[in-house]
Amino acid sequence: MSYPFLKGHGTENDFVLLPDHDGSVHGDLPIERVRALCDRRAGIGADGVLRVVRTAQVVEPAQVVEPVETPGAEWFMDYRNADGSIAEMCGNGVRVFGRHLALEGLVDPSVPVPIATRDGIKVLTFADGSAEGEITVDMGMPKVLEETEVGVTVDGSARRWTARHVDMGNPHAVAFLDDGQDLADVGPLTSRPSYDAGVYPDGVNVEFVVRPGDAHLAMRVHERGSGETRSCGTGACAVAVAGALRDVPEGGARDVPYRVDLPGGTLTITWTADDRILMAGPAVLVASGDTDL
Image (cartoon, rainbow, N blue to C red):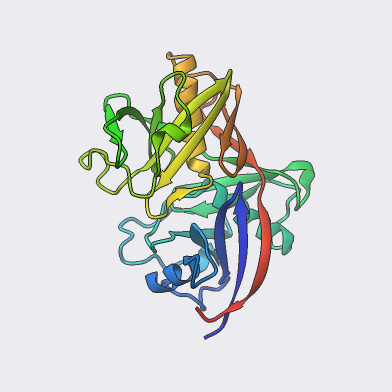
């Protein structure tokens, strides 16, 4: 069976998009299909797959225990990691998802656009009301688990870093390197960093962070289900939250735009006074076609 696809990226965190508006093409989206599409040698190549489906047509896979409440959002972002596993949310992915909808005339970019995800509704705002403008996403409220200290280690290194647990709809362990260290000092992230499986029974995204300046952070990330990626939107949000709490331990720095540099580009993250996380960044579509993978 041949079916249409698009390829896009947000700060080089790349995705295959599958238009499936009425849910009739991909159904439960087999794991094997996701893996084939994301294969960088035998497939199209991507960090994950975004199925574009109307919320009314969503039938969740059996492994999704709780149904998602998605009132008021016409479109649902069905996100899968490169290994085929289901993910709750993807910050770079939802911008690329919104870019596709706006360019196709399926949403009006002059007004805020709600997108349903497994982490609830995310609202997109397009700069200047243009389908091609930079996109800001209201990522919702972060959850910081203060009571749990976690540690992460990397294969080939005897070093253990203490990490802060920040949940952005998906879990993150944010580890700041010592002053004077460089992100390259972490070493290769070719395998999953080790962590306390009791704290993260479903796995975790791990971020390593340095601070080049005030309200300026740089990071590398190992995403569960995908490995090291060029960027991670929810990870950048978690890093900004952790950085804001280091700067202002009582409640975090609020309404301060944090610049977060990733290998694939830069995102701007703001933790607002009313406890929302706003993420602004680019989203680019680079190809479209048909495949029978």
